[in-house]
Image (cartoon, rainbow, N blue to C red; front, side, top):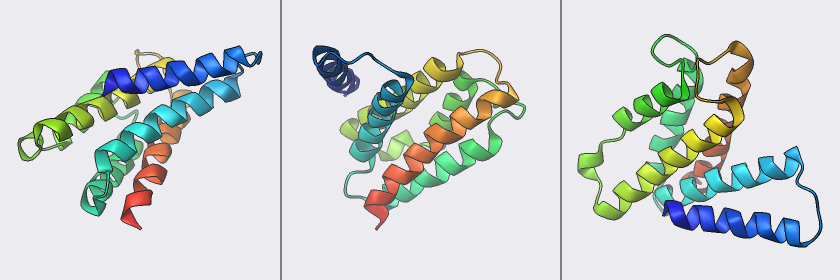
Length: 141
């Protein structure tokens, strides 16, 4: 799954480069958002219950980001993993859930790094969480 996401992102970036466009921050933002949205859609596919759980976790991450125990991207990802009951998932859903968490973590680390979160970095976490919430809403309608 992760390789599929990376392949799709590589294709998008390659097409942009092939078209002769220079990569701007806006284009990088679009590619990052696409990676997160794709992963969310695959994990929550056709399941309003899964989508609702993803939204609840994303909202919680927004609320606790930067607080003690949730002050690095790695700690935030650990909190998310702890909230997923992997024992209730089949092998495919386990792979998808891990891919989603990994994708979100990678996007956050690219945006803000892996060190201690500063208050100025919290909007980036909120933005990625909002992408997750917005995308999961497709299945909850």
